[in-house]
Length: 154
Picture (tube, rainbow, N blue to C red):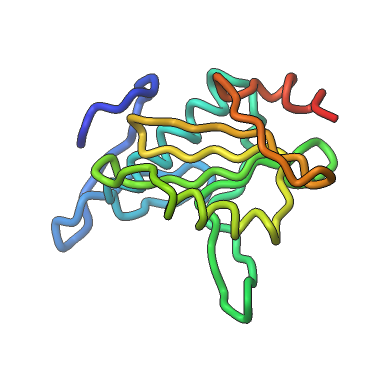
């Protein structure tokens, strides 16, 4: 897998009976197929938990939501201490550009979820915004806030 612009972690890799690469997902407590997007998602999970202090118990992978009568899944959602959405993460494979279409997808999901922080990443490029639903504005952040700082946001 490609080296990413995220700290490395001790990935537990194996293969399925059909020689498909698998990675251990500690949040879902099972091996999942190791796609390029999953490689990014696992790096982001470990970065948020191990470096920014997001509690693993408050991280949800591929959580379902309904939007315009369609069922969608978020890549990663961090919750606050009360169980409310805090940070919505949209992960793409390293070969996928983080462009306006990716931003539209994430903001569309966030209209339903209502997270005050939004992160778009392909593992190489990361964009993080603070979303103010009251004023309908977004503020681009220079870095992903640590959990303690994110909890202090109004």
